[in-house]
Structures are given as structure tokens and as C-alpha cells.
Amino acid sequence: MTEYIIETTDLRKTYPGNIMAVKGIHLQIKQGEIFGFLGPNGAGKTTTIKMLSTSITPTSGFATVMGYDIVKDSMQVRRNIGVVPQDLTTDEDLKAVENLRMVARFYDLPKGPSNRKIDELLALVDLADVGDHYVRTFSGGMRKRLELIMGLVNEPKVLFLDEPTLGLDVQTRAKMWDYIKRIRSELGVTIILTTHYLEEADELSDRICIIDHGNIITIGTSAELKASLKGDTIIVETKNEESLKQISGFTESVEEPTVNGREIRLTVKNADSDLPLLMDFMIKNGITPMKMSVQKPSLDQVFLKLTGNEIREESGETAFKQAINMRRLRK
Ligand SMILES: Nc1ncnc2c1ncn2[C@@H]1O[C@H](COP(=O)(O)OP(=O)(O)OP(=O)(O)O)[C@@H](O)[C@H]1O
Ligand SMILES: [Mg+2]
Image (cartoon, rainbow, N blue to C red; front, side):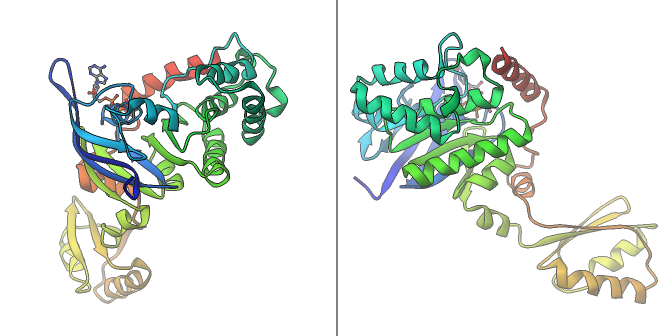
């Protein structure tokens, strides 16, 4: 086995109709990592997860999970992984434990140890008290927690989570983050997750892979990605455009000043020290600001800079998918 728990070389998937969903990705994921795939709708996240978890075969390229070839050794791969798909899989006409026992039977696990494991998993996500309740009585958040542990019954070394918090409200999402962290720290599982929530990738992932239109745009820690922005942005709006020109040269460290109407955006190394200098400069030159603000680097800006687009999180399509998902959760 290589030093990486997952490794891919030029992995591609083209669907019928020449839809190039994944266009040749190279990845090296370390044991014990939470690795986040961040990208908008249609970026190729689910397709990548489906290939790595052997539910679809790649069109070309090569990948291993724990050293096993995802095509030739697919059985060994399956035995060592857990998958929580984007769509809900639990049966609402069964009790929570019954759903989990079905997974145990699917893997042909011995009853005694697997029942103990199921109890342990229910406790891990605070569902121990409702294990014998029907899933249809669960709230959306409870159901997602159950979905989460469905992927852990066979004690996998690697867990794939496809959009684990899609459609959940902000508070419930934050709770899910705690459970996901707990799975890594208490069970030592390597986690590959997909999300189109920037703050989710930021909060959970040791490393983030930004993917768009089937290509990897960048991979790094959240701090590394933000550092690539080369600093903070100071935004100033003035009464007239003339004064913007003066402002753009207030210190030599300003990079890439961009003017938009009566607003100027200045990239500086550190706004904490440069902002007072700018204020002095403006007072000395009699320039009155209408508005001033500072933006610290965020994943939003990284995404915007690298792809030229917002993450399209609020697109109609996403809102529609979320509504459908919420309805399924509530049903
Ligand atoms: N079974 C399929 N047949 C044909 N095209 C597909 C199929 N599944 C996905 N696609 C297309 O492949 C591209 C990548 O889809 P994929 O589901 O991997 O994206 P994603 O990043 O998971 O998006 P989302 O955030 O919406 O879940 C999209 O253009 C999608 O329409
Ligand atoms: Mg998807």
C-alpha cells in the first residue's frame, strides 16, 4: 500500500451523451484526514465519490483505496469503506435499529458483535433513546444522523459522505459537524466529504479540494487557500472618482487596485496596519470617505478568484433540490 489511503491518477468519467463529468483528476488523500470536495452543482463531486466507492466504473484512469484498485479489487474496496449517499437511503417504515441491522445482514456480519456496534453507533450520534422508534417519526436532523451511521456498521476505514448536511437548517448543520468530527476522532475513520457550503468545508476539512466543471481547481488547507489571496481587501467609496486615483497609491504595498464607479478595492498585506495609514493619507489630502470596509480572506473570495464565479449556492437549481430534499426528510 502506498502512504496514501486514496490515490487517483488521471481519473475520468464521461457519461453517455459525451458528458464529461470528471475530467482527469489527480488526488492523494492521507489516512485520518477529513478531505472536503467543494464545488457547485454539477461540478463532479458525486461522480468522483461514486467512482471511488465502486458504484460506477471510471471511463479511464486509475485509483486505489487502501492500496486496492477500485476496478480490479472492487470487493476489497467495498469491504473497507462506508458510503452515505446524497439521497436518503433509510426506510421510514422500519425502526432505526432495523435499518441498521439490514446493513449488518448485507455485510453478513455476526449478530452479537454487530448489535453491539449498532448500539455504540446510535449512542455516538445521540439516538440511543430512539433506536426502536420508526424512522418516519424522526425530524430531518435525526434522520440525517441515522443516515450518517448507516455507513459505519461494517466498521469501515474510509467513510464517504456526499453532502451530509444538504437541506438542514444552520443549527442542525452545526450539530452534524460535531458528529462528523467525533467519527474521525473516536473511530479513527478517514472521511471524504462533498459540500457546496463554503463554511462547511472550512469548518470540517483538514484539506479542501475545489472542483468545478469536472476539474480540480486547487487543493490545500483552508489557511493555504486563503493565503493565496495575498492579504486583506480595503474597500473605500468616495464622493468623486478623482480621489480614487490618489487613494490607490497611498502605500507601496497596495496590489491590484480595482475601481468600480466611486468604489475602489485595495489588496493590502495586513489591513490592521494599513488602514490607519490610509486614514492619515485621506485626512492629509482632504478626501472624505462615504463608506469604508475591510474584507479578510474567505473561501468565498478564493472560490471567486479561482473560478471567476460565485459558488452559485443560491442558484434556483440548488434551492429546488433543497426543497425536494427537505420534503423527503419531513415525509
Ligand atoms: N447518470 C448520469 N448520466 C448523465 N449525466 C450525469 C449522470 N450523473 C451526473 N451527470 C452529469 O455529470 C455532471 C456532474 O454531476 P455530479 O452529480 O457528479 O455533480 P455534483 O458535483 O455532485 O453536483 P450536485 O452538487 O448537484 O450534487 C453534471 O453535469 C451532471 O448533470
Ligand atoms: Mg452531488
